[in-house]
Structures are given as C-alpha cells and as structure tokens.
Image 1 (tube, rainbow, N blue to C red):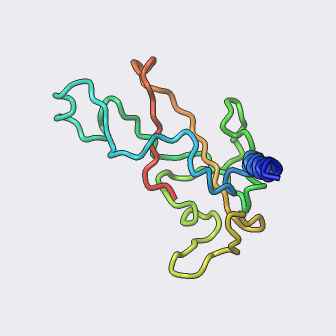
Image 2 (cartoon, one colour; image 1 turned 90 degrees about the vertical axis):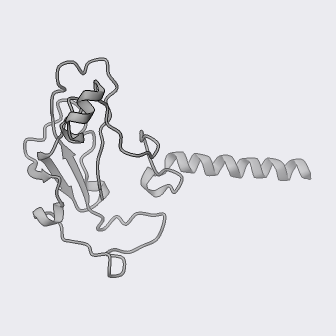
Image 3 (spheres, one colour; image 1 turned 30 degrees about the horizontal axis):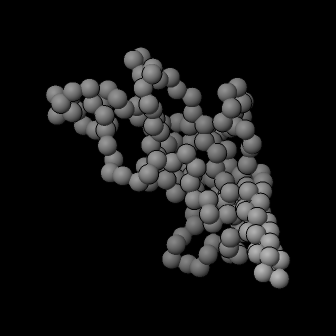
Length: 161
C-alpha cells in the first residue's frame, strides 16, 4: 500500500513537471526570467580609472546607447505576436517606427492602462487573457563598435514595463 501511494505521488509530481514544461512560460508562475543576470547595482566597465573619472556612465567607450527609432509590431494578444522575429533576415520592413525610450500607448498603439483602476482586463491567474492582452515586439539592428570582439556583451533595459 505504501509503495502504491509513493508511486502515485511520484507520478503526480512528474505529471505536474511535464505540464509545466509543455505550458506557456508566461502562464507558469515558476518561470519569471530567461537569460537574465542576477539583480545588482548598475555597473559600468571602463578601460582605466582615468576613463571612469572622465566620462558619465552612458558616454563610456564600453557603452552603446540604443535610444532612437526601433521597428515595432503591436498585437492585441500573444497569439497574434510575430514568431521568430529575432532571427537574422526576418523582414520587419512593414513594421512601424517607434521611439525608444518611449511608451507605445502614447505613440499611437493600443490605449493607456492606468493602475489606479481595477484590472484593465479579465484576471484568472496564472492564465493569460487571450482576448485582449497587448504584446509589443521591438527590433533594431546595430553594429558593435570596433574592439568589442571577444568581450562579454550585456544588453541592459532600464525601466521596462
């Protein structure tokens, strides 16, 4: 009897893990990051102490600011978001331009969602609403400065909502 109960518990645990693996990351409370560095104070790398004392953080030779126009695709729900758009050669020529940093709602996409009111859409955690749950996809191509080859490169997003 104990073996049967233990076996049943093991099967339940395995089934739960399989369900988690098969489900959508954004509907799995156990997935809250992918490829993210652990939290820490913002640090900048400088070639020398003199360079650190001379430059403001975002003007360092080791910082490439990507502010400006990006290609942008707005979708009303996750199922309408483009798949594979991060791949080289994906055609984003039909996408509109959006200014980064910026708020897409204030640039003509969707409508603002205010936090001082109830949920702006239906809520059934951990399920994500399919009817209206806007997704923004951003794309920008750039070249790394000369001399960055062989160095570890981190992409840092500030105040992303």
